Length: 279
Image (cartoon, rainbow, N blue to C red; front, top):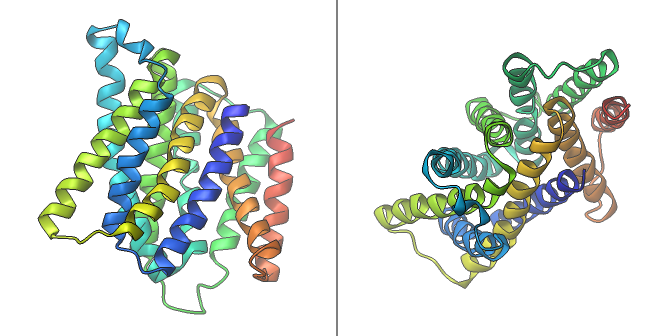
């Protein structure tokens, strides 16, 4: 459960970091590049000597291949999220991203036979309904780019499911190789993108890259650890629901943002869902 808490707190911090980076007018691609460069350094520092390297052979290739696939997903999702935040807003983008919880939850039921109890099924349904209620709140208020939001949902769900696959088929010692590989490959991909597009970078991009990259490491380490210890029908709904609760709570308490009745109702529903998922 400790790994899951780390992932929840890290995701919440990253959401607000991305929000303020966009408000500050930082170069999106440069910020994402430095996020992955600094994330790679942090992952290396936390890797404890790459204990998984002693396995060798196909066992070593497993986290590297999954890390490369995860890097493609993460860089694509990050670029789409940044664009969606500027068009659809941080709240709407985050909610759609967390709705991706349904992808690993449902796939794990069919692929790994992780069958939830009746109460947990109610919690899953309630959390999904709450998330949908929250993202419908301003559908009439302004034009939204639902293609971007749908892409955020799909990529976010696939990233979570990739962590689940690693937890099922690879030894726990492989977590550091997977995490370092993910951030290194992501940094290489973003380096190629920024060079080809001639993006300019300043100290601002480095600073916001650090604010995003450090919690990003916490999400990856936390989700891999949680997915290897707990069933998907607990990990992913609790993770998604708790992030939305924290974001809404912090927005109200510290940023003085008022929640609508629809937002307050969805937050209460998520709270009940979290209780059901932990019974």
